[in-house]
Amino acid sequence: MRIEDLRTVGDEELSADVCVVGSGPAGLTIAAELANSALRVLVLESGGRESSDAANALDDYDNVGARRAQPDRLAGDRILGGNSHTWSGRCALLDELDFRARPWVPGSGWPIGPGDLEPYLTRAACHIGIGHGSGFTDDGFWDLAGRTRPADALDPERFRPYFWQISRDPSDPFDCKRFGAHVESLVARNVLILINTTVTHLDTDPDGAHVRTLQVAGADPRPRTVRARAVVLATGGIGNARLLLASRRTVPEGLGNRHDLVGRYLMDHRCGAVGVLEPGAAESIAQRFGKYVVKTPHGRHTFLHGVALSPEIQAKEGLLNCALWLQEVPAADDPWDSVKQLLRGRGDRHDAKVALTNAGLLFAGARRRLVQHTGLPHKLDRIELRCMVEQAPNAESRVTLTDRADRLGVPTVRVDWRVHAQEDATVRRAAALAVAEFARLGLPTPTLFEWAAPDSALPLELTDWAHPTGTTRMSADPRAGVVDTDCLVHGTDNLFVAGSSVFPTTGHANPTLTIVALAVRLADHLRGKVAPSG
Image (cartoon, rainbow, N blue to C red; front, side, top):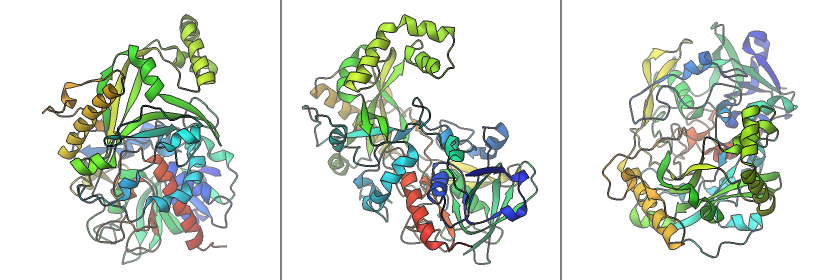
């Protein structure tokens, strides 16, 4: 793929069959899937090759809702590769339950099911840097890993086993996949990526049914025009809604907003530690709920074993979907970080000293990784019991425009993210059940924080997890959502949306694997729908 700056290209290059706005995992997956096809593809990225304060300032917003982990700026840098520049690499699948309309979760239910995504998960795994696209999140993991299931099974009325897979960058075994770093290695003469190119407005026909042009600006704010047969917005859970709402010169309410739904149903994952274990419990805990290194069709990959609330207890007690796992928190002098720095050629004398001082731990770790194929033993400060809980859709949790504009003239956003008592009740119930389940299994039990105790009236000390979701939700009925099952904006014929903003519900799972699978699916749809210009 060729990468250029907006300042260096002529107007004749600002046209394509498919224009993708955003170069994060969704946008670059679509571009890669359409590589070497008959379609001319143009990817527009607001940032550059490196992160910059000037580009990131375009994401400044007003927060009038619940406290967020990043109160002044949205997660996800404006940079080539998008939020893969900062993600943690944890990959998970939505549960079958997440696609259902659940009576105890108002507004739940997807218009597609897990079977509609299954054909695209293997290709998604290749894009995202994992070994298996499906079949790894429950007890199926043991067969994939060639391991014997633990004899001490979880109580199925309360919990089911759950596994997360950690993305691995093909050029750096110590890091997760950074999409931007691999763009130029893909040979695709039909794909052009323009960096430092910010879309400021989508221009349509008088009815708002067809996008005719995109107005763009860069370091030089002089407006320029992009023409494309099909347009895909892939700018994140906040950015997609912002651009639709801000494109109001012809349609005053914004594009796709005939029923006042763009920006509504903002969800995230509330996440954080709910309890703690002493470091001495690490060995016994790791044998049951630790990390496993598995040989897969795409190399060796790490899997993390945790638990999730069973569908039965969710239905019986009116709970949301919630998962828990144990997170080792390394001590300040943990040697493994020093070893990584030395192996990368970035280490110094201090790193060498730390490694030598902890030679015994490093030897034990090498044995565990090479012989037992489990996670590395760290020098720990503590072990945290962490949880991630879904949010129920709420139309009043939303993104709207302010009266201010950024330096390119695009209205900034007001984020009114709302939390709910159902989430609090779910987290406290799940935490208490986890403590009881650990005790039943004969494992060390976490000590819950006071505010996470079942009878506590204190506010939960959890924040968002930078997974903004739901603001352009998918629906079969235009009166219930913003995009249809093909991610086409209702009421338009050539405007599509990619990313977590189309999710009707979040489940407890990290969203990136589902985002990429939907992007692969959308790329196939575009290949069949958009006629090459020749």
